[in-house]
Length: 228
Image (tube, rainbow, N blue to C red):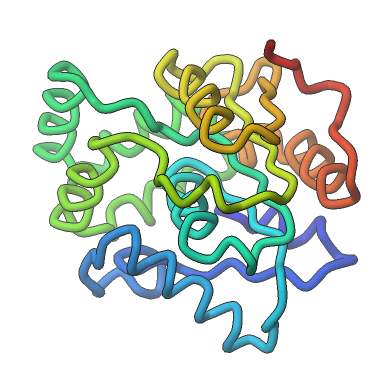
């Protein structure tokens, strides 16, 4: 998922740790968001980075990043979060996800997801392959926790720079989640990525890379649309 960013951020040490239940750790059980936050910080430390680091998260990664900010605020120098679904899921969303789980092992389901997210044709095969590798049990446990919504109370202890983004073409629930982040962390800068869907680090990797690089260098890309 982060290959375009690893290739672009040549001036930095970049870590893209697999989360339990995904990637090379696909056989591991879902441990819960708090345990995953602790695991992520431990892995960064194990790679020789004991001080504050810049944290970037998309979708589930953005939800997890908020747990990192809440549990390890002193370890994060800056936070870049995009596509975090933080509103409690209603009956309709839960029903749709139950239906999705019924088709979880079907390649056509993942191809449809790739199309809906605007993933380019040359990246879809890898996206489909990874989706098929994730166990339905992992997805079910993940959904149960993420669907509860909300921002961890401990986020208020993080005082560093925080940029919260939603794709302009994302769901209203994700776009409205930006305000929840800003309420918990008043220093939050809220922006929309023009014309983008959920997984815009692949949809338009050049735009995403330039926006992320600007943020890491202390500025906000002027192409992002401010929110009041």
